[in-house]
Picture (spheres, rainbow, N blue to C red):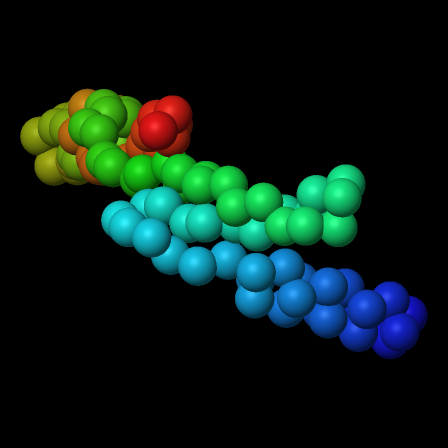
Length: 92
């Protein structure tokens, strides 16, 4: 099991060593060619933005039941939250 993890770690390290960053969200990747030469390909990574979404959150309160006792009441309300959104990469 340790040899598999070590092998995968070395392969990932070698793969990351073949990349160079060329701009904001762009990397040049050297890939082997059939004729033992290397070919440089530019890969554009996707950008991550945010968008607003509405979810129902629980609300706990009390409601008068009799003159003396307030009865607990559970309900929901709409709440606006910000969630991450992945924008696909644009072709160069």
